[in-house]
Image 1 (cartoon, one colour):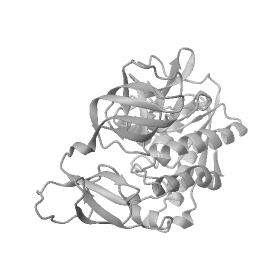
Image 2 (cartoon, rainbow, N blue to C red):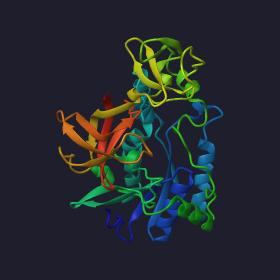
Image 3 (cartoon, one colour):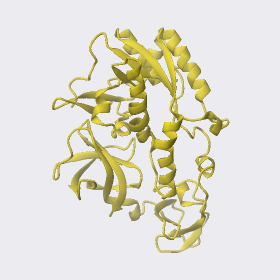
Image 4 (cartoon, one colour):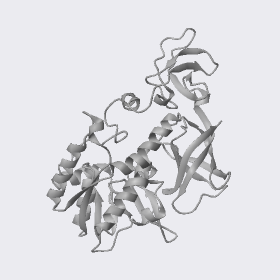
Length: 368
């Protein structure tokens, strides 16, 4: 349990990564109200020309300007398009090409926001970088530690778990103890233009456009068979990269002779044969008892074998009891007390001890 959220010393200079949304706006507001020296940075990670009709960059930067003017703080803008393309987007495409389902928001936090942006903030004289994440920075055994946000419906520690210890030591999360409703109320009271702005959802650079349309601009489709787990072909898919484990919508499977009315779900993707394997209802192949994780990153200590931890295999999932077994220094087997639905290779597993986030890694394999 987190006893006290970290606050910088009085008189500190704090840069706020401002996005044009309500959360980062209120982060800047509460820090200014607390008497800190505050300035804001708006970072551009994507070329709007790639996003005709879907990118909100122009609107976001106008809102950021409006908020900074209202608060009386300076706004800087910085372009990280090249770094984002090299260190986030390229990997995103590689993972989809390999039939996996990546999470670019996790990489963006580690590679861009708390690396490039934090360094830029330091060059401008900031002692730390604040963001609008719903998470808390505290201490564990004398070191900076990451804890879940007080609003469990909005907790974003999952997206921050790959931060390094040194990155966390320079980070600040002013909304960590707040509920979302409180944040919107504060924005309204402060006269911030973002008070009723809709939260962004999905992957930032895709925006509101259909995911398939976006991906087809970069990766060629490879149609193939849709088969049941027994091997019977019941349709054709448009490319394995367009489907994820547990998916129900958009499979294009009509009435199948002899099958029940139960919905069809994606169970597996066979890359060797380019086959999408599906099953009906809560199929046993949707559930796995264990997984193998790689590309591991730990904020404090490594998890211990035989100890009970909690884990999430996707954002918004309730924490699940588990134990770990080290294969070697680079891979970890995680066994769950209860079989988990739709564990997805390419996504992250994040481990917790209560509210404290230990870190995690990329899901490589699943085991029944």
